[in-house]
Image 1 (cartoon, rainbow, N blue to C red):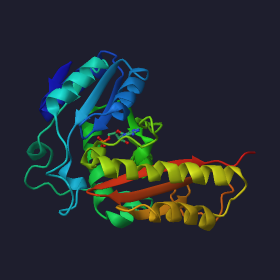
Image 2 (cartoon, protein in one colour):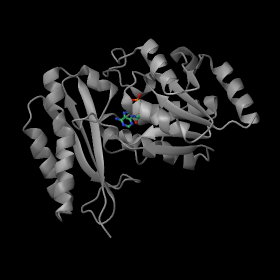
Image 3 (cartoon, rainbow, N blue to C red):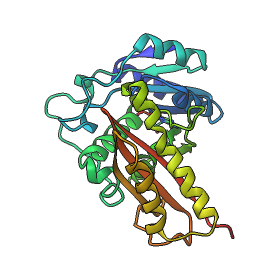
Length: 283
Ligand code: AMP
């Protein structure tokens, strides 16, 4: 597996690969790989001839109060895991090269990034779409794979690609979970064993909502109240939001008469964790 560290080398190599007919598939990441990342890489393999992973803890998507400096990092382990799943190259740029002095351009998807995570982290998605646009220009992928755990992020990237006529196919991948249901996340690393047990309420509450919905309940307020109640009972878990939204536009939904995204975020100790499920009415 080749490690590429400079933007210039990456762009020249990508151009050469494209000219020789390779189909490049990119998996953008912030590293500290878990089975979710590896599943995205395996899926990427089925979409093209060359799989690349970018590893960049992007400073502009963190607010000053957030965990940029403590974000878990282990390059040697990440390199080994990526190599084991057959990744062809890793692009690992320096922050100073991605954001040299004088940098001042932002890519912002204005509407669908406002609610949910955007309400709590107002500058986050602008940082994400800007860095993803840069990565697309540098790695020149034909396709890119993103996880549905970060559902709003996936939708923002798809919207950006459509709005800016980028020639990249953005593919979503299902949420990969631990055996007990917890959605995998690099930030699960922050949890103490007690918090790890308590964090299970996130996936359990979504599961319960899915059952209540399957039993005929379609009112958002009722489904959300159930989630709030379940999470409210667990010490050390503080709900940030639980909302039902249109899965594409992120518009609020009063009732589920079409597919609906039930998304939650909660603080558990030092970690802010996300989870979601799409509820689809049967025909
Ligand atoms: P990150 O390194 O956290 O920025 O994640 C890199 C990519 O992996 C993003 O597209 C995430 O949505 C995706 N991802 C992270 N955790 C999971 C998971 N548990 N299941 C599926 N995709 C995931």
